[in-house]
Image (tube, rainbow, N blue to C red; front, top):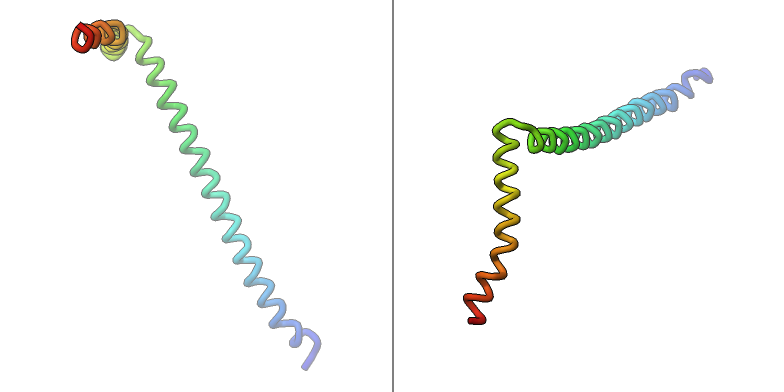
Length: 87
């Protein structure tokens, strides 16, 4: 056997390990990109909600009414509880 024939199994094993390493790194990079993409989606949704809630359209008006209702509820609930349980 020549020296090259003796090294051939080692070279094949190294090529297999390199291919496996490249596949693993590609998988890690894909998962990082998916996580980053999810972050962009969340931020985009939050920013669009904020823009819509502050706008003059239907969603902005509904959001404003909902805010006023919650403020009135927060002020009115203690009064109702005092009337119901203390008086």
